[in-house]
Image (cartoon, rainbow, N blue to C red; front, side):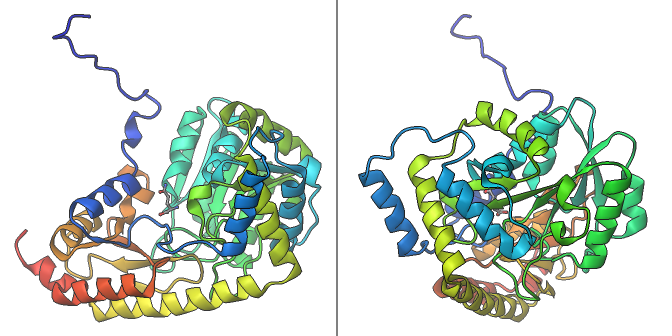
Length: 402
Ligand code: GLN
């Protein structure tokens, strides 16, 4: 190729529709405009010392080589033990638990390991952006069902219409990002019944299981018959405020686990060894004594109250979250034409970054109304956001020409 010729290679046909993740875009804009970043959901405070010290010890002790592909034995054991609290059964650590590089890899490993080309996966929109992208990477077809705000309930007729003879799995998430919903037993029962009738796998992303307000989290595996066809996806990142450690896992019956491991071994082979050791320590500590989890709950309850106050004082109508660390507000009710315009104007003119939730929908069928604010943030960060939003009230921004 001559020096003047430009190489024009780009993303594959499978990935071209997805473009850059909204989290990358908004965090870049937040940096560019020196904004308070309430967009990408990561804590701006550190994880607990007892977990960090466990990782430091593991590194100092020389645990620097690959781990067993599906997880260090003590990590698999601790995951199985800790999950009992929410899933109601004792998983076999050796045959049913797989440690992955974060839950995002767990999602990819499930879809790549389980889907054959053309298999369909039912997604509940709004849904986390990697779900549809991973379905596409695995050669599957996403059948997206739109839940309507502000209550975002699962309705039987809508879900039923998305199932077919090609349905391989349904992927759901509770506590739910970005709505903050925790699906009730009646909604779980609809999912369970349709999955059973179509012999579909239930992929249940439960990474926000420790961050709840309405009631303690219960896994969908508590519904009779579900355990045999379910994969629980979990992670360390949210519970221990260590999203950058990228330690996640799956819990599934042995045959499904075998398929997940088949993909996982070729994706990352194994998750970081010293961090797996620390994860084992962290999880067995909270199994022995739930003081850490109680404190986490108290702190998030206070953060939720504060962020609801900040956003309503700024004039937004909020969807009160039952779980997770996100609050949706109605950008259209606040006077903006849509969520993307609201996000852009807020980051540039008010110096506060949020995520336009339309990126969590199938593009052709997106609700362009909701803006997502993350409150896994220090009090000082939220107070600074408050100051900025009161100085540039969203309603006034919306009226002013751009
Ligand atoms: N899960 C986090 C969120 O929803 C961050 C995800 C990411 O950066 N890919 O904000």
